[in-house]
Image (tube, rainbow, N blue to C red):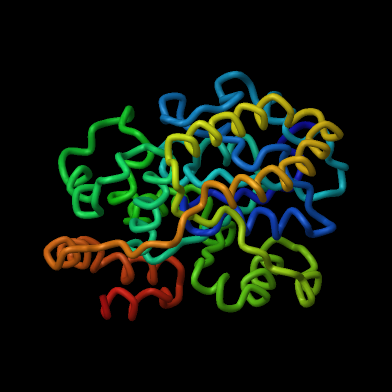
Length: 310
């Protein structure tokens, strides 16, 4: 069978909206085989500012290398949140994977921006002393082109409907499923049941499932150390993803290492201070997004009241 003959679930967005948790929940389904890396990034534009082992221009056969461990009867699955923001990605996926189902999990754009601010500080991408207002101000100028770093795209990328329209135009609504992180948090069984129905999977698997939270953003005592740690972890993943036995052994080691690492380097949670002027700017900036997204998704988004109350 060729790469395109298989069935695929592609989680295409968005960042900081529980894509990691959803990826692992689906990975555990007995009819699903997850890619050897969560973020394959294969279909991203060549100039998109995220590293990957392979890109589409190197040949679709390279995509197969992330699924060498999969049986033929399994639905293949990967999650690359930045696919949402890469202009050429929808058409590449359509051509290469004609049977793919596309999933997006979205979040209140204002709360997502706050999470990105914490995440950028956690990873030492911005100075620890930088306030949220300054972080927002950095993103209010010109877009800056393809070279602008990921953590400085968060403001504009919260306007999901601008990017999703291209996916609807490319795939049609019957191949796209919109989920919301707020609902995944409050009622994960219903969300997974809906995704399974859309993907052709048995939804009863999740009736007694243990829904853990993955990749939670936390305050780090040393963002510099954490940034270096994440780069090392990413490098190890890239080098071992094709070796399932080694990967499994390293995953067991990782669970112990991260337990002690987080105890040493995780600090207490902090409140993010937002000035009234910045808050008003963000409310105005995102005020039409809930309406636009509701039209695309065919139902009301769960953050309408949240935005109204802020």
